Length: 348
Ligand code: SF4
Ligand code: SF4
Image (cartoon, rainbow, N blue to C red; front, top):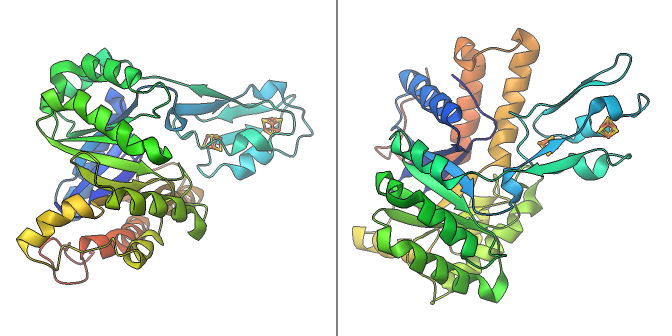
């Protein structure tokens, strides 16, 4: 089972769909599908949707750290290595420093950039080509796309990307748009984006509120900005149709925060009609990125230190621990504790 550090899990409360979000890269998508297949052989869960992420312009989620280790002073205390939450920097001493950033693990959080005392680390942004993305979607093993937009060039770059995806959109079951809090202009941006998408949008659409990007692993406070963003958007009357999903700073404290603000309602209560009206007024889902990476990463590191680089399904004790952590995180949203038919069987 390939476990990719660029993945995050998102889930929608009202239609009980889970998405595994990954890089828009053919080999990563294949690895995620392979991982889902291996997981489903072990735990009888409903197959999650595979979602790819792309950006229409420069975006924090689409950058990697880079530096030349041979350029680093040998006596540097290497704070970059210590601060990286993804263990993506590995350095070895020799005649000069060797190693550097492990690209597959770096998810662009940027925490190594300010800690380098010699200013050696740069952020390299990348932009996914629309035509290549459309070709990947047409392979037909992807269910959803997440488009990150920052609104800085209004909607021109989004329109360019959307038009470039052309008919591949019809292969999808969900289109998610991730965007930052732009204050009063936020709903204006959402409406402009929706009017671009509307003519060829024939699936679900979701607005992902990126409160404090890639910060969920930092602690309780990180979730406040996402919650504040959600409170404002949930009550905005001029927003376009679509589910609202929280991201950026989400962690184990997010559900309690939603409850406190009256924005949380589990699937286990309410009539069908009530549930359907919830989708327009409350929060439709939560995306866990950095926090999910943190809990699973800790288990993978422990496994790696005991067994070296290996597949987690070959080590049932670690697999069980990872599943228990993951289920504990999503259980309050998925109603796993209330006898819902979607509850997974007890772990073996
Ligand atoms: S950007 Fe973040 S994930 Fe990437 S190497 Fe730096 S600290 Fe690690
Ligand atoms: S902190 Fe800067 S100088 Fe030191 S090892 Fe890391 S990149 Fe090199």
